[in-house]
Amino acid sequence: MDRDTLRLLKWISAGIEAFLGIPFLGGTVIIATGWAPLGIMFIFHILLVVFSNKAGEKAAGNIVGIITSVIGIIPILGMIMHLVTAAVIALEMAGQKNSRVG
Image (cartoon, rainbow, N blue to C red):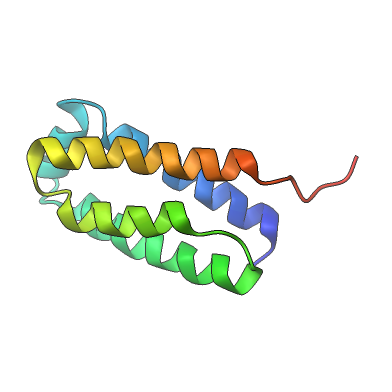
């Protein structure tokens, strides 16, 4: 997987985590879908950690995302953790230099 695709997938994961952290809305979506978003994001974060390691990129935000997916069933803590995960991934990505030149 090239680094641009990996960066895009990480930004997507940050966006989804931010959405899931929106008070009441994110929780409603999670509960209404039988907690499926937590399982999907768990797998997505694991894949991004594997791809990041292969590409030599940082994966701390997605590791936090794995933890968030596990404890996300706890109402207020889950919301906070989704927002923290989104912030960690976004800050991690903002700190990386873009691989494109000019």
